[in-house]
Image 1: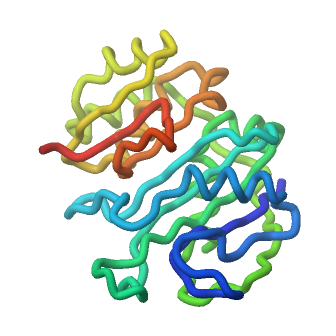
Image 2 (image 1 turned 180 degrees about the vertical axis):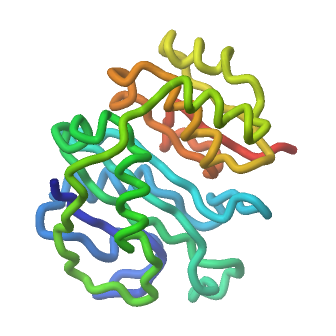
Image 3 (image 1 turned 180 degrees about the horizontal axis):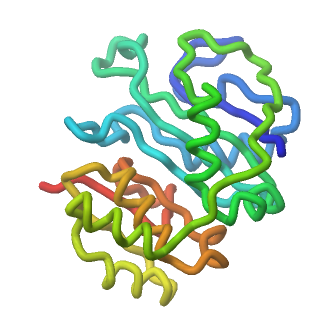
Length: 219
């Protein structure tokens, strides 16, 4: 199992500045890079608080593949407008790879995190490599995910589950660990719908990023 890579951030490189795809592996097409640029967050779009320093994001691409990404803060914004660089590292996987992971984006996420693929790179190479993923992943256990949600003191998710199964989009406020909430929630949904369920765990709502499940902070 293999994944292509791309990095979207604010960096002055090759005559370009501001937010753009600054690095990618050879298998990422121009159309996919353009789609990643649309879905990826720019300045001020990452919701950061004490329990949420990163956002995990997942969405389909028009090519039929999927983008699984991790967004974090980088260095102070070089442009001088204040704040920190928003840095998104995406892995692009095909439907067969997602299927072999039980249609669970978080299985691939934890694998990639352990392998160091999502580490922040201040000056990434322009051309990245296609990277290997593990061949085996633990299968989702809805009962275990429900038990973990109760152990973590997460809010009741029955209404949210019903809305997602019905095909509705949901913006769910949560002050706690939003990655944990998303993982517990997805683990209780039918596996065959997960590939079509785009989500982000800590990004500002945006019309150009139409995630089906959007976890946000509380006012």
